[in-house]
Figure 1 (cartoon, rainbow, N blue to C red):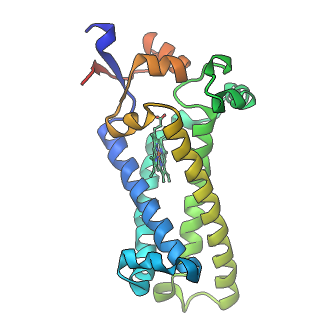
Figure 2 (figure 1 turned 30 degrees about the horizontal axis):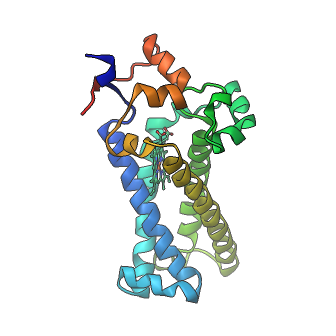
Figure 3 (figure 1 turned 135 degrees about the vertical axis):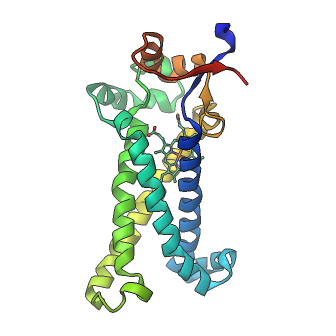
Length: 218
Ligand code: HEM
């Protein structure tokens, strides 16, 4: 295989389907959640067939999100473990934002920004889920007192705002780093992309320490 035509598989089909189920659930949760958050945003409930429907489907989508995100945790926790290099990368983050990665220390498969998104969501999604259970009126309304529900609503809303902010950072970074979205749609990146954004990862692949699959460019 000529090197110019070789690409590196970054996400396999299972990774990608799992990711997009998570992403779709998240967007649907944000839309249905916002429709219940403030009367000005109530119009969003029209997307779900009205207020009653938005309220009924929101928690169930939350259940699917939790299960789906657990799938991502199982697949990605290892590569998101934090190392000493991550601190160095964080210190030079202004160069990443300025798209001047020559000044940024080389990183492995994931950079500290990606790890931040992963661990933030790993914390926030269970918080959203369990605080959501406490205010799921149909099933748990009788089991929880009003003061508990009030605290749960507050925690649920704060966690939702935090998760939306983390998600905005994630999508912005995905678009900012050119051809990252292709990694999550078609699964592959070019060696040039890996050299530019994840040089240590490329070196690990070249030395055989990372068993990433190589294939012909489609
Ligand atoms: C809907 C909009 C979204 C877009 C456009 C998007 C885009 C992407 C892209 C392009 C990557 C690959 C980045 C790379 O390899 O450099 C990625 C990875 C990932 N995304 Fe998303 N994403 C979205 C939503 C979400 C949501 C809602 C979550 C979690 C709640 C999420 C969690 C992840 C995780 C865990 C990874 C894998 C990174 C790792 O290896 O840990 N994404 N996403």
